[in-house]
Amino acid sequence: MKRVFRSDFTFDIAVYLLAAVVLLIIAIPLLFVLAASFSDPDLVLRGKVLLIPKGLTLKAYTMVFENEDIWRGFVNSCFYTAAGTAISLVLTIMAAYPLSRPHLVGRRYIMLLIIFTMYFSGGMIPTFLLIQDLGIYNTVWALLLPAAVSTYNLIVAKTFFENSIPSELYESAKLDGGTSLQILLKIVLPLSKAILAVLTLYYAVAIWNAYFDALIYLRNSDLHPLQIVLRNILLLGQTEQMGTNDVGMAEKVKMAEAIKYSAIIVSSIPMLVIYPFVQKHFVKGVMIGAVKG
Image (tube, rainbow, N blue to C red; front, side, top):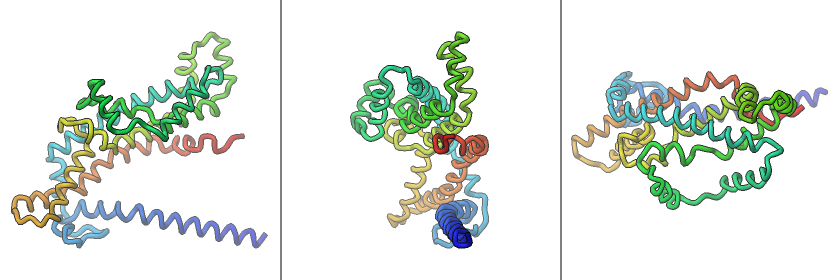
């Protein structure tokens, strides 16, 4: 018994040490960004700031809130995230629920076709041509529709409906004359708050952080999400490496450096606000199928 106890103790210590290392790897860059956002941009450019703010100032945040491009991108990202998450949830549930029913004819082959898309796609150029032919290029729909359904999220939702909703509920609802839509809306969804919270978080974070689709499909800068605006700021800050002597450009570089880190902090706030509301369902949702009594 004593040997087993020592083995468990050693394992616990190893786990805590590994967790501490991972925490440091994640926390140090975040603390640097936070410290730099409150520091004098000159000191940041000279590498004088690490984890503690120096030359404490709120100038960077003032510049962020006065920047029209950032505000426009912030509003656009909020719209894309809210609308995109709603569309994705509806489409994912509409696909996952029927695929979870054993009486659906050909559901195995349909799932094989869906899983196939996880490993193979049409490619960037064919997808671009398709979006042009559909007439949604340079519109908000170019961001909302093409990536509306994640195959992984669909499989997770399907697994939840199969394993977590008792078949007796379906049978009793059918005996009472309930239609498939009524069963979904009045029985399945109220019992699926955990998976809905997980899917909401997954889709919202993915849409909020996405920038590549906007970079390809949106030509109008008024439609750009916040991530594209931040990318442009970061690219402007990198012009310092060109060694230009232009005073105006040097001032722009300093300005970009000042708002770069504060903009990152501001852009992270919405996801930090959403997470506490879904946290209580998150663990249950991600453990779907892990424990089965």
